[in-house]
Length: 365
Image 1 (cartoon, rainbow, N blue to C red):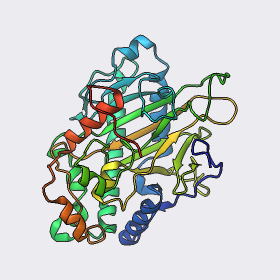
Image 2: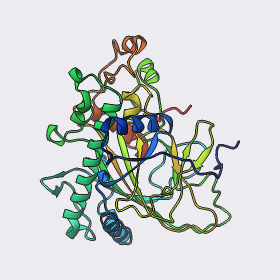
Image 3: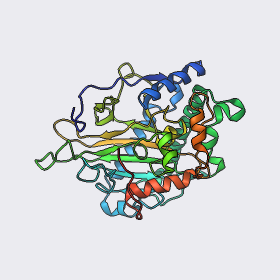
Image 4: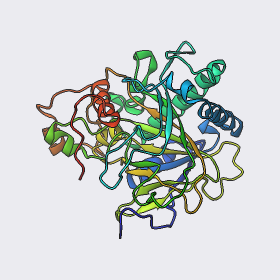
């Protein structure tokens, strides 16, 4: 099968209600889901986002992206991964893709005492409190999920137990690379020069980088493949395009709203595993390669919002103390490996993504 093309059939990604009473059962379901797919939908009151909250956030996104080029340039993306990136700026450098991505994004870093630590564009300056609140909800959901993953992995209570992941994502322990990203995929005229098997809206990637297993990280002492614990993705109805690379090496569309969730008071949220979580769990929780493609027929604007959850900058990257993950070979590979912090790891990957510096691009396999 041509890996550039979609197989057309939507993947049946599990949908899990995280409001259920039994945390142990929910945790086990979450681990099973992402171990197989790298993605999972979470639903129920436990997600914390009402329809109105999401509608308001997307309204702010449209407000910003409809502003002038001059306004966007005033908050251009910086080396700290904060600011606006215009179409064709981002590129994940996969040979099948001839051009940069057909999208624009606005990244917001962490807030301090409810205040943005970056200049806000005029279109959003009066909405600082709303942006802050949305980011808080995102982080709270990630902490809830991180605790469930730790519970599902049966981490030894004497080594952190259910708080092993969440304690490494504690804002009170210092800054992190966590980012709230507004995304806009502009409508593109579908002319003859556009090849939708090559020119796509967001190149094939994982968050950040292509998936790599613990073994390759350790053997090559190479920490430039990407970082990220969890990603939350919020999408709009009737704006498809996300696809993931399946085990059979074919692209499969991801539904925006799984069947049976249409009337949910708390709409389902798509969660995917980042490369750092893949690394932390020795590949048990999978960081799955994904992309965003143009829909069949007419191209229309597509909006989404992503929250990239990262550990605190000072956290050292190490293996998770879980018997589900740990084995003697893994422990041997850890010996003599240079310690890398979350901050240093992230900076290397961002340099590759945005073309900052002269770092060599990560190899593809």
